[in-house]
Amino acid sequence: MRVLSVDLGTANTVAVLSDHGVVDVDGGPTMPSSVYLDEDGTLRVGREAERRSRQDPSRYEANPKRHIDKATIKLGEQNLPTNDALAAIYARVMEAVTALLKGEHLDEIRLTHPAEWGPSRRNKLLSSARLAGMTGELVPVPEAIAVASLGGGRPLAVYDFGADTFDVSVLDSQHRILADGSLSDVGGLDIDQALLEHIGRSVSHKDPAGWQRLLRPTTVDDHRARLGLREELRLAKEDLSELPHVEVLMPEPFEKVLITRAELEALIRPSLIRTTEVLISAVRKAGVTPEHVYLVGGSCRMPLVAQMIAEKVGIVPTNPDHPETIVASGAQVVDRAAITLKAEDDKPKFVEPPTVVTAPVSPAVTGPHPVNPNVSGSNPVISGPNPVISGSFPNPAVSGAYSASGSYPVTSPYPVNPNTSGSYPMNFPQQQAPKKDNKKVLVGAGAAVLVVAGVIGAIFAFSGPSLPSADDCKDDTAQDGQGFTKCLRQLAGTVPDGGGCEKADSAQITGMEEIKGTVVSCTIRDGYAVQYILTDSVTGAENNVTSIAKSFQTERVEADWTGNGLEGDYRAATSSGTGVLVFTAKGRPMFGILTKTAEENADELKADEMADFFEKSVQPGE
Image (tube, rainbow, N blue to C red; front, side, top):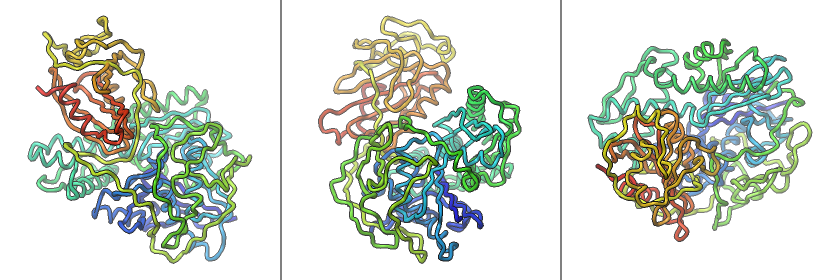
């Protein structure tokens, strides 16, 4: 039986073919999960997409899997269906595999996915595979079960340090998942960001304006420089797994920077401690002691990962030679009878309203990868026991219940031409995005809506006698009649003087966990509202802000602020008439969330409008 297993990861895609092994898809065992949309509608993938990204970075998406809950991905001035982006990656895999099959057919294609994915996300993955021309029986395989299949019949834990998130699963000897946990703000991309900020602290003084352009590019040249620097940082991170120090080439006018492994480890140690805490918690919840801890993901190559697990958990982890390919390899040998799929969808990290596409989706294609018009495009399908309209597009002709074995029947094959160059030509609706009139610099990502509940207040300038220190904030428990502690009062300035502020049990954001701590909500004029949150630590405040900002999938504004005797930074984004701005207070265990819901002219609400209001009314500069 010919079986193909494909692990479409956030950063890289890996394929393994039975009787062959890891497939060389794009010049190596791993292919970047990247897409680039040409102006003529041709969709490039992998390393070709990376090469073309320098031409126009706005047409490039390095991690389309992060948009699984969205209907479309903004590439240039066009909105590309997320299904089509994922399908292009699968199609590139099929090109390489078809050459190896030599006329034979695949009996089964196993598609790996995070264990917590429910039917909506799985259906989107499966429909993308069908759209790419994958024939044969499609079988969804949870990643943790795939890895566990390599460990024999023993209880074990899977420590998955991916590009986007950290996940852990504890399984019994029958490969049943007993407990799991995750961190949405810890991943390889977050390490890259930490390195960027670390370098900025040492070089930005030479040209502050130039550094700000790197952080928040506005021109094509700025975007190219930022893209090149991020690639340098990724390579430096990988090299530091083997070398004690590396040099990072910097764009002009900055000189190259030397980074040591000790510096990198100091940056990531707090995050790794959190991952070990999640692992320990999952083991306790599972009630079994794993005999092995399997490391998954390229970030696990960093020596400190295995060292921290051994120190904190007391188990020397199993570190495979190729952690990037272990999921696809495990999917090859997984017992179909052992596959259990989550019956319901988790609440998405963000909620997106249904996308309305005014232009028809063309049922035709111009290249070798036909697109079924019943699968591609903005045709939301509600499926599964807990339906969610989040941009999932299964084919109505084939979507339905999974069989007892976990397979998904395919009734309509789409042929793949093996003599193709790797591009994925398609016709997409030519949607014209509104022109941006940005007073501030924007950082691109995708489209998300965060709706903050119970936010109320009024805004004035700050005046106050004595300012509490950072140490005072740690034991700051006494509250006034409106719920403010001394530290929260400092952050709010004279906002409370306008009335309308009151205590709240928690800060609530739809699609995310409730944020605990001391919370005060205040009403603001013109549809604006703000929440002030005091947490138990500076790290806790920063992690909450990072989690919220990470769910921003639209273009966003970022900048520093000073006011009320404090300083910090803020990040703002808007989507479909809802705006969110989160701001930190440097060295203080507290942060704030500013929101606005536009009832009229919703599409005109912009992130820089949120930023202007914040700087003029919420935290006026000193």
